[in-house]
Length: 121
Picture: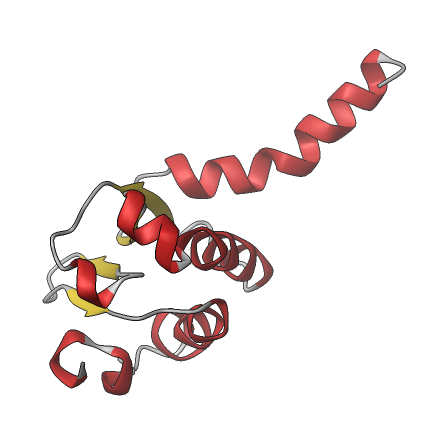
C-alpha cells in the first residue's frame, strides 16, 4: 500500500464480504469451522458461500457465519441453513461446488437439495 486512497479502495472492496458475515437478516448460513471442519475442507466452503451470495446479490437477505463444532464430525464439512419460521436444514459433506449449488437452488430458488442433507448421508 502506498496511499490512504489505496487503503480506502481495499476497504470498500471488502465491505460487502464483511457485511455478509456480520449481518442479522432472516436467513443464516452457518458453517462448522472447528478443527474437524477445517481439516475436512470447510474453509473453501465458507469462502464460496460468501462469494456466491455476494454475486447473487443476496447479502440483504442472507448472513454467513461460522461456528465451532456442530457435533457430527464424520459428516464434515457441515453447513446449517436457518430461516425464520422454517425447520433448520443441515447440509453435510459439503464442497465448494455443492455450496455454489446450494446458493443457486436453495437460497435463491427456495428448494432444499435433499441429496446433500443429513437425512441422505
